[in-house]
Structure formats: C-alpha cells, structure tokens
Image 1 (tube, rainbow over the protein chains, first blue to last red):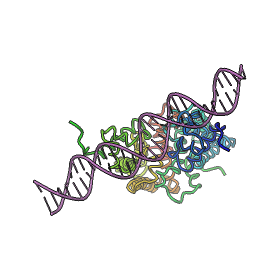
Image 2 (image 1 turned 120 degrees about the vertical axis):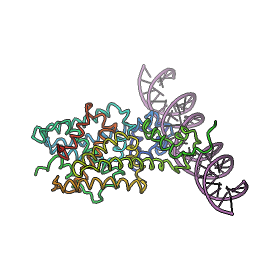
Image 3 (image 1 turned 180 degrees about the vertical axis):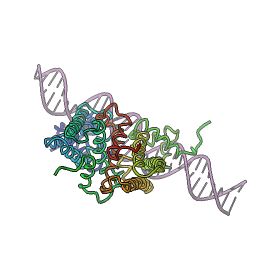
Image 4 (image 1 turned 90 degrees about the horizontal axis):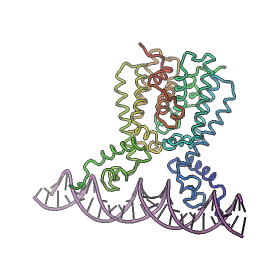
Length: 197
Length: 197
DNA sequence: TTGCGAATGTAGGCGGTGTCAAGATTGTTT
DNA sequence: AAACAATCTTGACACCGCCTACATTCGCAA
C-alpha cells in the first residue's frame, strides 16, 4: 500500500498541519518543505496549491479572522450597547490567547502587506461591529459627548494592546505574575464603566 | 587600494547596517550573509562578533530599549503625576513610530524568548517608571479608589496597543485615514482625564 | 625588537530553505 | 478513446545559518 500519486486533499492537509506546527513550534519553524515531509509528499508539491509561502500564511490568516468573526457575531446577538462591547472585548482577548498561531500570523507585517481582499473584508467587518457598538452605547448615553472617532481609536487600541500585553513574550517580563481574568475585566471597566447588575 | 584584512569596526558597522536594512526592507529580509556582502567582508566574518543571528538581534533590541529609556527619563524630569504619564505615553508611541526597526525586533517572539539580562533589566526599568507614575498620580487624587494593579494593566495595554494600532499593517486596513496626533492625545485623555490648563 | 598568543577575517562545506522548470501521472471532459 | 487540465515528482539554483580549518593581523611581553 504505497502512497497514491495524487494526495487528494493536499491543500487542506497543508493548512491543518501548518496550524499544528505553528501551535507547537512557532511561526519561524514553519516551512513548506517541512510540511511536504510531514505529509509524505515531494518538496515542491505544496507549490501547486500555494505558489508562495506568503500565500499559505494569508489563507491561514483569513480562516483565523473568520473564526474571530464567528465568535464575535455569536456574542453580538446579546443586547446591544455597553454589554455587547464588554463581550466583544473579552471575546477578542480570549480568541487571541487561544489561537496564538492565528494571532501571530495576523501580526506578521509581511503577510499583511499584501493582504487578500477577503482578509481585508473580514477585518472591516470586525471593525464595523466595533463602530456599531460604540454608536449604540453612545445613543444610550454612554460618553455621549465624546467623538466616536476617538472612542474607536481608544477601544481598538485597548483591545489589541490587552491581548498583546497578555501574550507577547516581550511584555511577559514586565507582567505581574498573579494576573487573573478578573483583572482584565476590571481593566476594560475603567473605560466602559462598571457592569450592570 | 584594497580592503584591509581587518575591517576595524565591523561589529558597529554590522549593527548600523542591520538597522538600515530593517528600516528599508523589514526584519525578514535581514541576513548575516547579506550584511557581510554589504560591508565587503566574507560571509562568515559576522560570526566572530555575533555567534548567532539571534545575538545580533538581541544587541539591537537592547540599544533600542535603551533609547526608549533615555527619551522617557528626559520627559520624566517634568512634574510627576498625571502630566508625566501623558508625556510617557506620548513618548512611547512616537518612539515606536520613529523606530520601526527596534519596535519590530522587540515584538519578535523568538528574540524575546531568550532575552539577555540587560534587556530584561531595561524593560523592568521602564515598567517601574509606569508604576511610579501611577503611584504619584493616585496620591494626588487621580482614580485613588482603583487598584494600582488594574491601572498598570490598563495603562500598559493602552500604550502598547496605541503604538501597534498606529504601526501594524494589520490595523492599517481598519484605521481611519484622517487620524491626527490630536486624536491620539484625546484618546489617552479618556483614561487620564483632560490636561491641566 | 622579536616572538607569540589572541583577535579577527577568509575559504569551503553541510544541511536547510523558497522557488523555478521540465517531465510524469492522474482525473475530467469531449 | 483522445485531448486536456490538474496534480505530483525530480532536479536544479540561489540563498540562508552555522561549522571547521586556515590565514592574517594586532597587541603585548620577554
């Protein structure tokens, strides 16, 4: 029972194995030749499906953002306004923590520089959710005097920064050891105000 | 007039050229062999000064953080408390924007994983400045009811996040085009309160 | 001054990588 | 059945980090 000439599902297999490798060994240990080796396929076979390594990473990034969108939309079904923003923030942070591989790819400048249209659309979709959250909260009286422009910058920075502060090895050295999930919620509450009881 | 056998200042030349390359072409286009080529030196010469590529990146990272510390200490001579925090935040963000190469290296997981002691010390020094700022501001009545723990997490996340939101290509697609420096100041004011007149 | 060790640079090689080109094999359509 | 497109293999090229052995130069001590 030898390997068939055609793998049959090589493209998906490459993506799946790539995510495994990234979770286990990090982005820089990922190589097309290594994937080909793992899947018992010649070293140039992956090129039929991904002309360049960046194309593979782009595709992975896209499914990663899709997962984020999916999770965010689920929480978005809750009551609009402040509570939804809180869930969104929490959702992003836990998504980033639990999907280190995706998060790492998304933050790779070389991958993003030539982002695909689909990837850009997904990111825009996420951003517009934030905008709507802000809009709804403001019409409910929350920080109604502030410019939405500034609130968006602040919310996006805080959300992205919280995730990175919790994940990035650089910040690990200046992170308090006893950090708990409650503290993260308290941190976002400094911006959103205390949760409704 | 041929090249002398000994370059004379190869170590510094390597560091300087490395920063140039990173600013022009990014971290992944940086190679020891490429640097050797640029400096008209044999491909293995850099190894005398940096046994491994990570050692070069570590050293660059360290001087990068040193520059950040230097700039921060200068602003820290101002009146303590809220105003100092504002300057610190602004200083970090502009540092990150103007030193993309340093910032990119600092955020490389593989470089940070085996950070040198000096690098860790520099980071700790920066963190302790933030702690002191918070302490001073709280003793002046600012958010005196909150836990310093949470304030630190919030401030660090917001600062790091703002820099990344402004720099990272990933966020470029969801960034408002007409973003001005004033908006960044307004954003931090949402946390610190309006500046004293 | 001479000599010798340490520092620095060179030449070559090993295994790894991404990517290209030419050919072999298989699936699909007409 | 034949033609065609998709897929995979083989081989090559240039690049990379890093290792070893050797050459040159510097600096210091006898």
